[in-house]
Image (cartoon, rainbow, N blue to C red; front, side, top):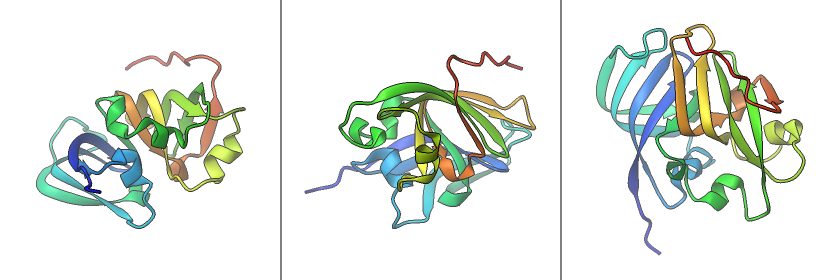
Length: 178
């Protein structure tokens, strides 16, 4: 069976940089690429880099950059479909419920809709399983120390290994935009 490869536009956030470019993905999409345990890096083509404290000012431009997956906090995409096949993003074909969640890392605050099968169980979400990146829909990323860095994205993958706080918020927090 032939693999389908396509380029997906991405906005990648590390502890110190924002990397904008395109990533080549196969049939499993971006979620499959980031959760693939056989590779520890991701290549971003046509990459532009900006420092977090000045997210709109170009710091460098490269034909491609290699990023270690463990260093990625989040990846934002322009459409939900760019995350990958729905069954893979959800983790299977079982019935899922949608929860409004807030997650905090040492660098970012994340907010969005999260699909989970059954009762919301933070311990199972953050510790069990093999997927390092969790899919958030209609997500908001806010830098903790740099309030001018606020990103809204239809699809977002958050590195669960970076999460320090994870909350099922009964409703949107309504944080102010700055």
